[in-house]
Image (tube, rainbow over all chains, first blue to last red):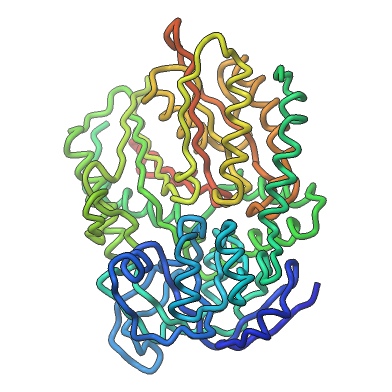
Length: 203
Length: 291
């Protein structure tokens, strides 16, 4: 269990060194992405002008305030509360994010499934777990909203955040076939019959 | 007692913002209790982060979670209260809209087919407003629950049959908690509705999921089952955020209603660890806020 400080964009080699249960703190840029963003990008043929190659995306739709554009708020938005949503709904977008845009890090909560794990292994990617529902804390790791694209989908726009000391995040799915969610799932399924027997349920 | 509708509007606005920022004391101590008993190191770290977040939200006067949820208002009207019911619902709706625009808050509410967001947290039939009555004199209370989608997306109904008995209830609850895994932002309050019709059963599950920790089902058989299931779900090993551990749920809560001789309905609705709610009580002395 090692801790890594990574500055985005990252290389494949930097991702391949990460193993489940390691922790990571991110610096530099982070892109916010969500259901509608990805439905429009991958089902409706829209493209983003952002270069996501080697970058990290986080499953989010933030609370923001519209403000005058300034150095502090270059996109015309001030962050209010930025947190992380359940990743599972966006499972089928992992692979196209990686093959079409070169994304290497997905940050989310609750985990992704087998196809994402396979994509991480084939293409060199990683899933970093953040603690869901701790958005007040997460917001303190975000310096500003640097840019925004596909903003007609607001709040599910494609957001570019400037981050500082974003983490620690837990490596929950790595590029070597390791997934904490798979092992917890196996373990919990194995306990099911014992728990039901304890409740007096006849098999 | 006559209720001033302008005050209701202000209160509906204030309640939405309060609910999003300040966690009720029973939930705070619930997190602390789980943290004290958790044996898995990763799970302990996760719970510690949740405790930190509660503090940061209070210190920075910020929302606990970015999910502003689907706004739900539960109104209970006491005896001797004079209020125009239709205008009351309108005042709550306006207060909800104003909270969204004036704070501002992320509007998480869209049309189910067009997916259009009016950026008001309101839409057809939303905010959800439930109205009930009590014999308590000269009191009107409004509870506000911003129901987050991570947990709401894991809602289940099974129309079991009498021959499947209580075993069906126990098995269904365990299987729902397993199916939800880490997606509900555990530790959760697992709300279970038993009996009634299908719609009442689901409503009971929601009522159970949003009940304060430490409260018990008013039916003794229901209370007994709550206790058994609360211990059982925490033996599954799902843990906080589904990353493994002892702390899968704060508790299992049950609400029940009579049902048909041929029916055995079971509903499950979960509330995430950020189990937010706020309450305002109107009396002749004025409005007071609590949980």
